Image (spheres, rainbow, N blue to C red):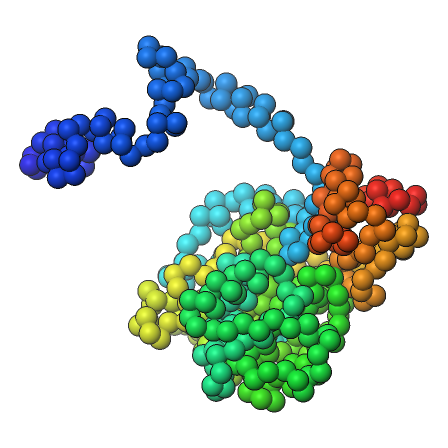
Length: 443
């Protein structure tokens, strides 16, 4: 084998090497191998004449962009009212320009050298502080991948920290559907049994023994309720209580810490991070005092430099690349730094009062929409809610969803008789009037 030039060493295989490999698998040529491996129905020769190139003529950059814009114009972009953990939001221009579109932020990697990463570490400690303030818990890490994986990490944290023997984990029946799917996937792999219960309908004393319990707060249906007694009952038998909470709602309702939660998880997406066709978004995970060493991911803390000045550093790193695998609490991919920074800057930009005002406006619009739905003959399933309405429809639910789609809005079809709609920061009074008309009531 030639060993001199770069090309000979790194660009493909030579004829002799190919012949050896083909002989080993029983084919006389590369074409014969491809013919056997690729179904005839998708062979490129079926889509062109023998004299034609498989590729179109080369286009200039301007021509390519014009073609892409033409394709994009064919899309119909409707307003999403589906909710379920994904909400439209307004990204302040200063954050979009100076963080999201700034290569100093969007190319950031793990701050292994704190002496040159003080700005990023300070932004991340802002994120951690924001999460602890809103959740009412002691310590938060520097972000997770998203809400679903944060819940799974919360379950695994509870399994490590709980002294309870049964490998049973209680799941609120009103949990987000994508979170349920991820829990089932992980639980099956590690031998955990999931028990799904309607926690609003069961007596706290009737809960089965389990190492952990998850409450969605507010629920996927929009329901807001007080799970304090349920969490206290589970904890009295050794379970760890996990609450998956909406950060914007927490500006108005009791925090997970006040409810008695050991762990709080969720998404920071609606704090200025665009929906992005479903992601990526920064999740969060916070714990009560005493569980810090069980945190997955990274924890930014404040120390001192050689001159005695305050300095930020990674206080806790529990990934496999840092410590022994059997001691690690998370794998290499556990954070969304850029999006966590955006969410923290959004909170700094608006401040506590600004966030509360946004949440208040959202819930007022939801109540205006609930009134219109009731006057149109639909029945509200839950009386207590923040931004999401679940309606028992007076007509076929699928037909109502189809009518909304034709009018430019996306509703969530819960089942044959129920639809859900969620209000967010971008919802306007004009939207409420249009949706009221779809529901059959003029405002």
